[in-house]
Length: 151
Image (cartoon, rainbow, N blue to C red; front, side, top):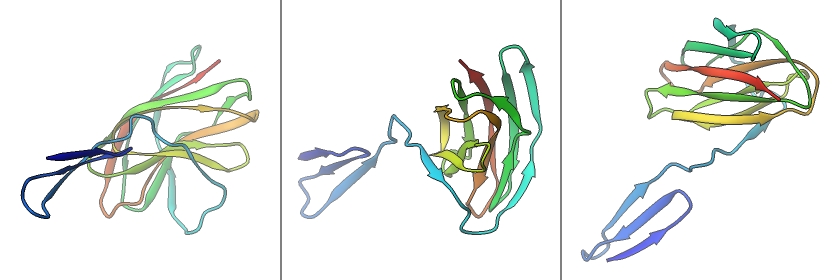
């Protein structure tokens, strides 16, 4: 049996001729992507958030994101010396969703996540930010978690 390890997959060759078992493993570090303009129209709505601590900038969300839709938080202020930490989970955990921030100039920075996720977005601008989840799947995905502005 021969085993090869790649970044996100393990290929195991068995004794059977031409037979392979592929074991896909999730990357431990999510890659941050940037979207500067929308290539397609997508319906956008403002989701509810619960402020858990105004002093620490901690808010929670629990959004049902319908197919080919985006839900985002209301705007909140942050500065270029801060970061926004987003943690949560997407369910079902077999479907990828974009989870990220919308910067003051409208640029979107995101991770593509399924199941549990956590990412810290380092900020480079002062202004009003929003956290968002976008579902490009054919059915609804629940995205629940929290975000916090940190120094």
